[in-house]
Image 1 (cartoon, one colour):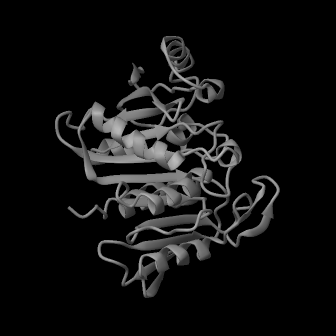
Image 2: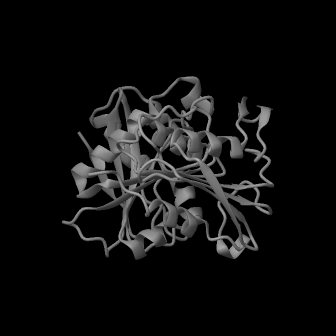
Length: 312
């Protein structure tokens, strides 16, 4: 069963953590979800910058009512399969914050892509050793994200060969875990301000982008033996990229530089796969934008993801 509420154009939806933690589902829980997902006036919180319609969708998974926001531009054809991009929020954030800061709604408007912004349990994702409630309780977030893809496919046509996952911070970590665990579902992943906290034992080569600031003190570029905030060791970002590259059979790396960042592109990877690391010397722990950092974060993410598709 799927519960749906359409939200006014460019409004922001929220779902309280207490609803997402509730076990079981039914009419009363559906009502609670829809009440907490009531639209907030566009002026109250920053919108994602898109011109499309957001829909909040509640769906039961593993005995819990979970939820996601589905954003579709008016330009997206309703009867034709289109790519699907899943975007995961950072720790203790929510989909509306990620939608507002990533600029990906505008990408969806111009590229005719459906976007989905899922809600993590207590604002967290089980990305392996990190983070929060989801990791501590070993929530099956990999299964949930695959379930979200199936749920969206039941609501509108999507191109199953072009399903992507991206995220910020804990959401970026979860994106990397998801593509490693389900390379049959996700054609590529992009992590912004995250790292690999789960290892990668994919059954086939994977495609992944890591975009990271070298001034990041929350998820340090060089890693750390223990993060008091995240309560775990954090993998150095170059090590994470190398792990993904080895998993995909990459045999060489090519480095290019721009005035704002350095890009390491691994070469000779398995068929259809690639791994890239974009290192930004002046960037801290936030999603980069052209306006604030001179780095087009959403453009870099989408340009990488859109080059990949699953084999027929």
